[in-house]
Length: 615
Ligand code: F6R
Image 1 (cartoon, rainbow, N blue to C red):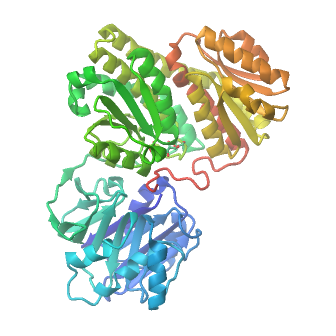
Image 2 (tube, rainbow, N blue to C red):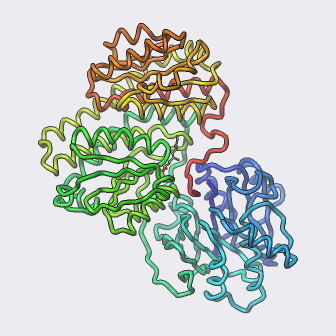
Image 3 (tube, rainbow, N blue to C red):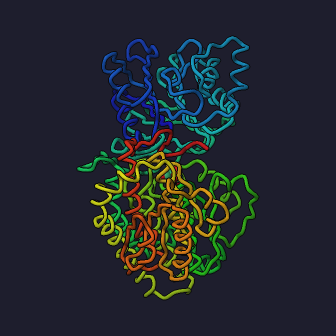
């Protein structure tokens, strides 16, 4: 998703801005740009480039520009193609005002139409450009006052975080936020602005998270914040412990591979961290033992892979805590009928903690004064700040766009949490919680052993063989159905193979018509003997139609293994509910190997972004 970075202070800004953009590069983008006010003349200078940030860096090396204030951007296209013209910053008619923006201006067409009628000149197809033109009336004023900026932002609908820089005000950056994230790092006679604190981690630990629907007038030694009516707001300065570690693939060919291999350790780290916080967890979750006891339902809200984790966790909560669970896609939740329920615990799952749909769903629930907790991998994220309480996974930074270790640590944290929750509700004994902790750690080892056991044969035989197929069907039942969904999503996003996932029992209600000798059918088995028998029937139905079966099974499930063209097995000695966690490493590795064989850009699949901050 788009990233904005800004600087105002006593140093030349380009080094910080390029480093900030590079630190947030993993979020995904397709072009980049930089603008600054020349240190001597204060003339607005800019450079833009389509493609990777390195293209822009090279361009600025050849034709250097720099100044004491500047703005930078990486763009993930929404309106207009990925050309240099559409890269940010965008300008007013005279190119003396520049703007970088993350979000969508929903009413830009109407604004643009009116502006074209008034004679404004446009240089791009983006929605962003209207913002720069809206600033034109203030560029000749003596001062920028809050009322002027409020009058501008009141005209903009949608979600946006933007920074505006005006040639006529060389001591000022104007920073605006509605929905999309934005923060200001307060240094010594310098201010850093960015979509995420990671951009300025290590430069200052004082950070202002700009409140929703507010804007800031930022000079090198002062910040003033106002609401959209122009009223000054008090400033809350947070202290952040965020650090930045240079992401390094080590000996691995891709970040995704490195992250698949990190899973055993980060699962154990996540359990250790939750275990060590047990005594103060209620405070962090923002509710009391009585509230847990009174909880009648759990409602999960998430997107993509995090939604799959929620679908799996549904089985945890229903089986261990005997509590009904509903699971919602965040993008649908907001537009469906909502029946607020005070004894429901609403759990928002988002590894990044910045996903726009998940955040807006959280805000909707919060507006009803209900209990919310966030499960994320980023303790400083917006969703953590806005939820009533939080749980954090310890996956560490996940660079590959396709989520692997963030997903498995979510499963580990949710399996741990359901036992903590059930114990607090007196539904299980303390021994059960301790056993669950040991089981997760055991399964983390099973995950890695399964990888080691099958890695060579996948690399040398299976990847090449299965890379030729352009479609696939994924089947599971009960808890292995959401695992099948997650596997299908991974194959789509990193190998560009059309994949459809189904609850295996639905096979004969339609999708069986697709099965033939050109269609690999992936079957994800289950530990439960009755469910296994049903899956076996489905496997036979596929086999009878000449379908190719790839089974992910338990070591003792010989019938399924024999029906399959290829079978991957994991140790049978694990609790049924932890089956998806035990299998996921192997599944990810297999799909990774197929994608590699197909020559796909695994870490940065086309059209996707790591942090989805627009709806
Ligand atoms: C797929 C993937 C996405 C994310 C989704 C939600 O591999 O990573 O489907 O799971 O965009 O992201 P978060 O969890 O950050 O809210």
